[in-house]
Length: 151
Image 1 (cartoon, rainbow, N blue to C red):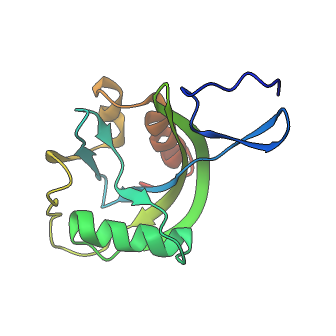
Image 2: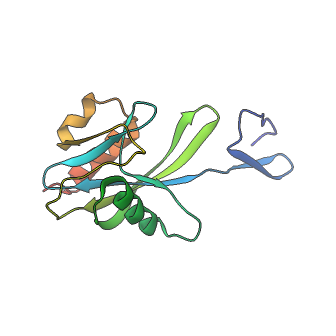
């Protein structure tokens, strides 16, 4: 990469003179199957998103995701495999690496969302296309369907 870094690119770090690499927070998210529904949460940007959050130092991605789902929904889920990854440009100066997992909730208690979000919905996967949410979340949900996650 050419030495063209500006103050508007705080997600880049110079490793050697003129060579830059991404320095990104890592966020782990889950497409959670609860029967034929999945929970989605509305964030402070009024976008719908998958449950999950930032990777904490010392945690594995699966541990972070299990903790975040418990905090955000009150559910103890079974987290399985990561299957979809992307870099989300929240704003021009803010990028996040997102790793999406499949998860399942087999309990009876409905989810209860935390103070971190404005709203929670339970939708069928075929209802997400009409929502205001990043396209890669929609793609992750569609791929989960293709993998038989809601069967």
